[in-house]
Length: 322
Image 1 (cartoon, helix red, strand yellow):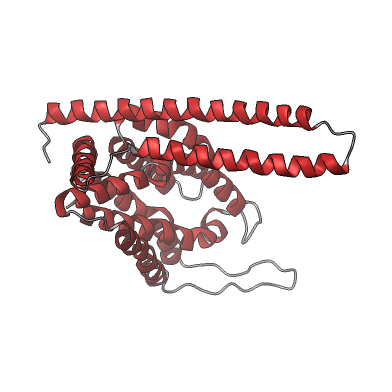
Image 2 (image 1 turned 180 degrees about the vertical axis):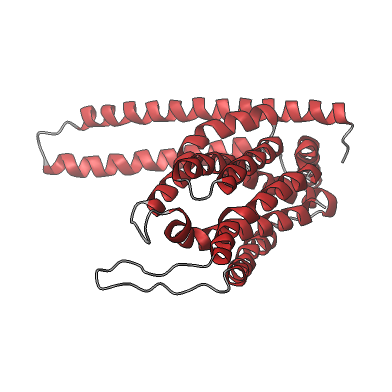
């Protein structure tokens, strides 16, 4: 079930985003701009579209850790609907449209940054139920939704703007073409109207995605299987985090040896350089960076453990089982 929800999610998500993208230039030129291709309207829409993506990344992860990835993503789509409606009721008012688009783009941030993390959870669920990983095939299928959405979005947009008149210009370069009201209305629907229903539909669809609450149990069960398999083969089990630590230590050792060799060669060519002093500076900086990485990794592990604990508590309250 969760796998098919992922497929449907990405198909409709990309249809909405690409249809809006196809309509953007037309919307800026014919509906919102003061004149045809005024050179500023589309730029403003793009800037307002990109700004929340930079701001939102600092907000979305703390919120997702506190309330859950699915909840934050679904709430984001409700925010999208609010922004879409604001834009839709006054599609030719630049100030109102920019406010609406800012709100909409803030709402889309969780879908861009947080929701993909739930894909790995769905792959874990498939492994738990069927005993094999399907990350490569699954990712390919989901990426193909983007390709399908490209064709669908172009078809939808071209269907909507039947009756569009190619612009003509006078000797001074001013556009003298006027589009029919039906075309202007269709452009508005392509840019924002359709997404009101798509974003609302995605928020509802996410209510049925229940893998997040199951994930702590699923991951524990998968790890226990791996431990049991390792023991059955007469091998010693090593935690993945410990394996990563050992690999990193080996890489660090090679990096230091490589630096020492380069430093010896450099000092041999330059008598003013002190091998011991340069090595000391390098090791000081190296150890500082390593300590920062250790602190960051420990914090990330604590955050993940706290997040898993919260999901387990919510799952117990709601009676969710695997």
